[in-house]
Image 1 (cartoon, one colour):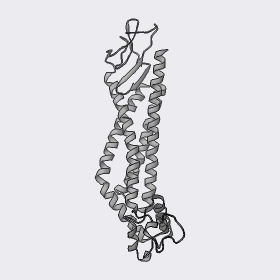
Image 2: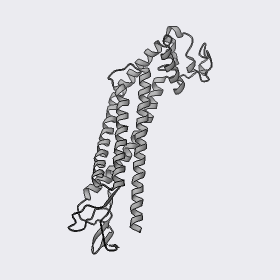
Image 3: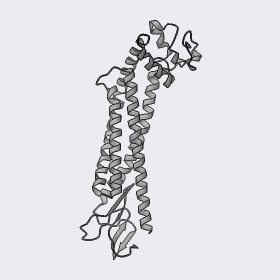
Length: 284
């Protein structure tokens, strides 16, 4: 009974980790979609690092979700092959996230520069296009910002002399941006505000996913490193004088041709493995 309860507890902990993994995947996909919408509204299309960024974020999120699904199937069916696939996917995720972090660091200035340039171009079109005006107004309202670098950027637009869009106002009313008072408007620029939003959301979700992946990879590697060794490295159970259940390694019954019926991974590399036993097990 104690062994069965322990195994159920371990499986429950694994399900919790997989659920957290799914949450990270959904979070990354949501951030990627939101980033794509923001960039589509303010930047011209093209194969640039700016537009590749949300695509990479969404792809990583989708891959995380696939990995979590494989892990859930492996845990539910107690399938060793699926758990190996899960371990391989986790390792790939860590490599992809590290590569994405390096790429983001390398291209950070270029992405920011392109976003700033396109944002200013949209500002020039503000008085002429209703769609552009609606997009910029929504962004300035949502991010509580005004202009690209700051509110003075609007002074460079000929048709916006002595005024800012009403969306720059702290309390938005009709024509509140005409002959404005500085204390009544948002003075920070939108480029830095949006860049900070991206850094915060992407880094938090990616760091959480990377942390969970690291914990599970450690457990998986520890399990794979000890599987088949036939050694008992810590206190365990014996059945009929032979190792039956052990902690810290995977102990198999001598001359057993069948794989373990249940294998659950724990960080850092601990494994609970149960083999068929007709006798009542006892502690070593």
